Image (cartoon, rainbow, N blue to C red):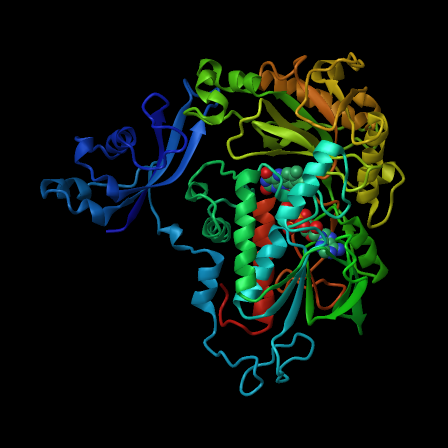
Length: 613
Ligand code: FAD
């Protein structure tokens, strides 16, 4: 009895039912039988097998593209086979790389179920009768009310922190400077169509955070199969994401699926008592004796329902993302420690999607059929390490240049929150059916680079970002027009003709020489890497490929030090910095995981559950 895992089961494109089919097909059963050395595939009961992962493998090292599965076998279910197959089962042996005897990791549940299973049973905890103190400021003093926690920011980190705390019974107020998705959608529409930027409701600010109008890629570098990632993914499923995200090798949602998911998330938070305040910006922390005891907020909705307000809390979870530069300034005014950190800057490259399909799939490219075909719209991931030149400071160490946040079938969007600064990113819808493929090409930078441009201090990285965003805005000529150059011309340091290839970017593009944007060592690192990417993906350097400037907000330029166990800031009591803006995440899933862990850490401090979850 037990569970066995079968890896690397490959099924040809011809025989596989296609990318959206996640059940055990006849073709997959044939492969399973082959690996198990079971003579008659049709005698294997499909219900004994569960697909755990399905990926599309189009690497050039393969003879031809194929679907690759990981499947779990429930040995007990094979026992229904007729007796002579018992002999076969007893001969099943682990084969390296193919079969592994592992416990069933899918038992990890979504966040809500995990908490329900771990909550203490003492419902009178906050009554002050026999319960422990719920207060964070004075330990073990009976109190008559629930602890009050503010969560600032409704991105993935803030949503998951709010969810965990509310499920444990904490009195949570979720404060978001932007608007709920319905109104935010209209504000983004006005930006894209009429170039009207709402400084508090845009691609960065609003319900769901920076990743709402995004590609919704749920890939993460923090361990795809870890319990924490699985419970975040299951929570997304609970709130409406398709179950396929639990199995897809490269799961993604797309904006059209993220929006209803967020509405369901919001409804659940309200059902468990979270007070959500949209259009409300935290301007300052109220600090007494080195401890945060509340926040000053103001109306950021423009409707001026209130001007400013002081709100008292026992602790504040700060999940504001990395575009809230005003918050970094505010933290410095309280002498909170902020440390500049490495990140990456670069350009966003866009190719016709058809070209990427052909580069990746050759003749199978026809099967893609605008996202409706059997095989997924092609993507790519490239990386190159560039050795520095010791004589050319600060280009002294190894840098990497890599593709990042690739959006197949997507579009380039403006993520500025201020018209004098221009920065871009990418988004897509679930079908990824646009005719373009875009990705950031980013080069790592460190505090040495910031210093070389005379930016010093904790926010040197922010100043470094701003410098290139302002240059890009000037090069585009204002009004969110993006400076562009064909990849070929960039490689030859030549201004592109005024008529550049068409772009998915809807606010206008203008031919410019992007060599004028970055210091020479960043430009050279990009040129060098692009030439190696072209060897890996022949055709990458093309007259139809367009580089857009500028991609600066790849991850946070700052880290806010915190205690690794309690998540509390090391320099300001009662402040819990989480997510990407605090320097502990880089993407939707990792930000959600960080917010979730912060919620558990706070719940533990409040003595709301017995053991580690
Ligand atoms: P954020 O999502 O940035 O959320 C912070 C929230 O805090 C915002 O809603 C903001 O309005 C609010 N806030 C800020 N200051 C205040 C204040 N003073 N008062 C009240 N509220 C405040 N990642 C992926 O993994 N996959 C993708 O496909 C992907 N695509 C992206 C596409 C775009 C266009 C962008 C911009 C980002 C994309 N990312 C993607 C990155 C991802 O969105 C972020 O890594 C993630 O959202 C970070 O989560 P967070 O909760 O830490 O912060």
